[in-house]
Amino acid sequence: MTQVEQFKGRLGFKTRSNRLLNKGLIQAVDMLEEYGHPMAQINTRAANRIEMEGDQYRVILRLRRLPLRLGMHVPAGLSAPAIFLEVTMERLYPSGSDSELTELLLAVLLRRLAETLSPTVVFWQDAPKAMTCDAFLGVFNLHHAEDMADTAEAQATAERTPGSLLS
Image (cartoon, rainbow, N blue to C red):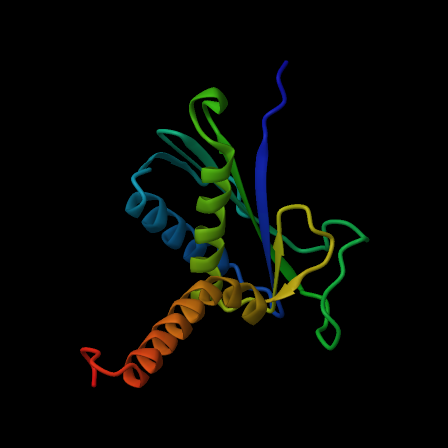
């Protein structure tokens, strides 16, 4: 039997809420549809788990009330989360899809969930240490900030150069 490669992320929240799963479902379905992977089947038989399956991926959202393992650490100054929303992505056809693309889709999904649900911490893949939500979202803004800095630098150089279009 072959082992299925799973790509996981976890969001930790201060307070327990059963609405997290429903809100997460809406965000996951919207994001996957936006990126060309509409969900064909959604299974919500368990109260703490939603499983979705589409053309290329199986996505599982699961609420966990206890820390997943003792080795997980939260950043200093933050209390341990009361509940986790675990997001798991599996490729249905591993030979027909790319693991890096799956990681990117997971990152985009976690970003959308973090922006919508405001968790206190985010665990990426199997990293034992969590990031604050702001640190996780800052990774996505880093590229945008670099582009803005490059644009500002180019503008300043053009202003100093005689005969430039901006002078």
